[in-house]
Amino acid sequence: MTDSVTVTRGERTLRLPRRSSALDEARRFADLAVRQCSEVCREAVALAVTELGENLLKYGSQKDPAHAGTIAVGVEGDRIRVRAVGGVLSPDDVRSVAGIVGKLAASDPGAGALYRDRLRELFENPALAKAQLGLIRVAFEGGFRLSYSFAQPELEIIAERQCGTAA
Image (tube, rainbow, N blue to C red; front, side):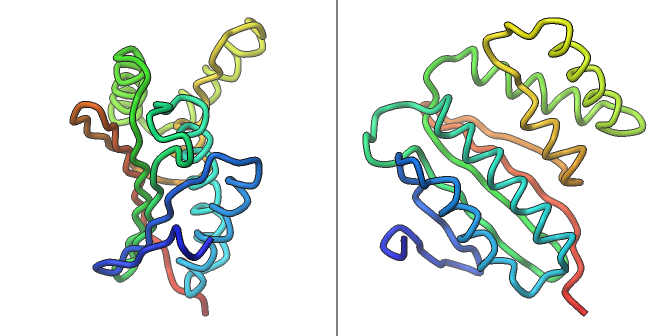
């Protein structure tokens, strides 16, 4: 795993490999990046890295057969940032991310209602091709604020939250 990790400006970046152990490697990578943080924060980062990593593996471009994209974790003071960058297969995927991030930003009082609504939809329609629950989980369960940017052909999803350090 070490040949796929770089550290620049306080941010550790993992080139996510396309192999069965990729998500386990991503969780270990994230745990090392936030080992000084509280347990609650470490768990939130593990959730974000797992969900964003799954998205890279499932929905990302196949341009690089060895890697699905990158996941970066940065700690600056009490602010944690998780970034996932990868190519997209379809403009529809970008629109989907934009729609979810927009709904999360506009939701009042938070992501809880969106989370419950999406779970209800999934229970009512179990044959849906894409669950599209991961980003909502990152916001609701992980407490992250999400944003994104798209510069053809790469989509970047950013998850940020406040985290305390371990006592």
